[in-house]
Image 1: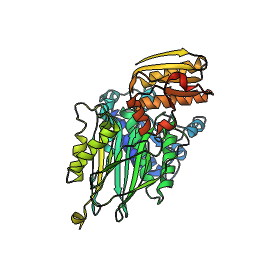
Image 2: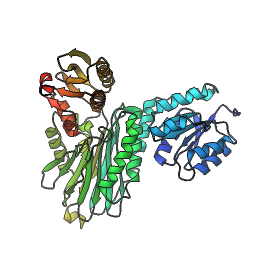
Image 3: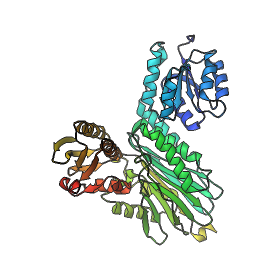
Length: 370
Length: 110
């Protein structure tokens, strides 16, 4: 079933929107015309309609499972089917079965691995489109990373919230994410080990997992289950991620947070004092059996919570110098946006080797909030 | 980054001189894995001349520690310089990777 045109088509069947977006992007850059489906049955229909050359198929889908989808597809399609699974132990079982898939890849995967596996499959079915994937992996990693940042500003009554991100040339694994809740907001700030697409994809996984635990009321429990899910994914790649996750109760100003190996969040008070919040345990994925206690801080009117990435720290000789510089940069500014800009400027773009990321959550002074 | 090692009475000392970053991290892992494969499972990584370590470097040390423990031994670090110490403290990994003043002290008491 070689398609008439030289364009290769792919269908991505994956329920996690972030991972789906990444797969679409990676395949598009490899020269595929890509369409997508978020569940099994719509995916089967999409394959019937598009007659693709390649299908990527998540094993765990909300309606019917991936193996069932695979069986249905094999009734009418001879597309290459690449099955994705988040669990390495599932992978062992799957490869032992003759279920119609051509390749199995465990998440998190590196795009390079995905590409080379797909290229190997297509060597049996060469295509002119294969050469059109001429953009560097680094450019793609940058796109992935940018796609993880919040698209919208956040508005919480009585607060001023801003974040800024400046990628390095080599693309690190920084990102931040936030969203509004009935009580206030949830904030995630993370840095995945390493650089390039591998780090960007780990960051994407972390973002998806942290978002999925947002509905749980207890921060301790939510973080414990999220870190477990992330660590399982990280185990296969020998990687880890530093993670600061906070929940703001806007009415009281209470911030509950968990810090896994980040250690670069600051409480800057309206009276000028700054206090660094030490991490509560190792990065997620670094050491089995780690536990992370929940801590709290009270944001009084005029206080700020400032979270900064190690790209800024690298400019200073010590944590003390860093803390003092961030304190000063935060204090002199009249908005969270201006403070973020001033902190970002501490690590000049010309010399910074790593991503630089900052988030400022400022509780407005009483007169301004009234 | 340059690596060397020397087998002592009760441990093997690995010296890692230079910057422990994304480029050199995989090489350190490989080097230490080879030393373990050579029969030493008690490893001291002497960081006297390691002026800088990034997250990939930390990842390599953790990987080496896991490998040494898996081989029934341990990995300890010695002569840690300020920037490396800072990274270990910020990430709370100083509780997992035990630091000693000198390589000789690392396995002295066991």
